[in-house]
Image (cartoon, rainbow, N blue to C red):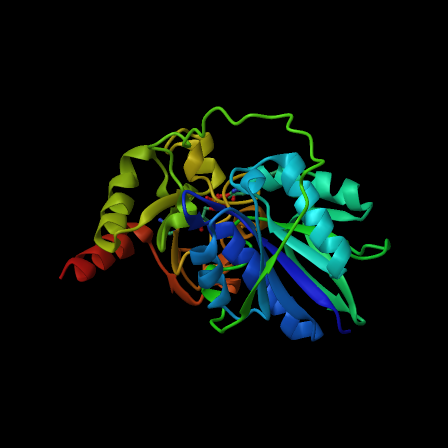
Length: 324
Ligand SMILES: Cc1cc2nc3c(=O)[nH]c(=O)nc-3n(C[C@H](O)[C@H](O)[C@H](O)COP(=O)(O)OP(=O)(O)OC[C@H]3O[C@@H](n4cnc5c(N)ncnc54)[C@H](O)[C@@H]3O)c2cc1C
């Protein structure tokens, strides 16, 4: 199954966005599984440094298109640039991170190319040599397998945290600059100001270590032992839905199908049963430690290490050991 995979690399404030590294990691996996070549696409202005960073990963090439009209995100200019590159090169896939910018861009590009789009995917598999993408449906109660029947290229956006950045392989690719003609793109928009996301919001995606707390904690007053453990590990606190529904912790800390999807290096689940709606949000953690008094709790099916016992005994003694 030869062919090419393209991955759009998003950036802002001189940095490549984490979601794009995840999309590139997915691209590497699909390339390994299918024998396709992998190419990153970087749109912008003065992006040589960023292109160098991407070329340091396992990619065949980094295609850069530089233009004043691409310096800031403009949906018309970005669509036109991608359309020109994709139509000239005819890749099979165009992968993007499922971030706000691409929620805007991906359908526009798909419509411009007249090709299929699968959004917010959590993974892929090969079914008899055909690519199948997995996305959640019906408020994430079902995982749907999506096979696209239209001609490639197919446009795919990837849910944040679905592929761990740690899976990204180093390598060395070439950097190839490409000219795009944006002279006929209407200048419909002027960017007034870029506003930072509100500070103080919890971004669990940035945490290397997360201590997850579930209904087993029983009441908000008991959270102190979880906070102590998190502090000893320099970790963020995540939660299952009942903890949030009970207002024991703020909503941003919820992990799962209706919360955040995370992929930390270490996830310690305390008093969490492992319901599918929680597990879809944290199963790609590198190492999962589960503490639960019920030896049959489903969380043990995905745990790297399982501790069967009372969290009110185990968590404080773990904290004590860590502090020592
Ligand atoms: C549409 C939909 C979306 C949902 N989205 C999410 C979501 O995003 N995130 C999410 O988390 N859930 C979500 N849920 C809820 C999900 O189905 C589960 O109900 C929830 O994850 C259970 O949370 P829990 O594991 O904390 O609680 P429980 O299932 O009640 O488990 C508590 C666990 O604590 C253990 N325990 C009790 N006492 C102790 C102790 N002293 N020491 C150690 N262990 C103890 C018990 O053995 C048990 O396994 C969703 C549900 C629906 C229908």
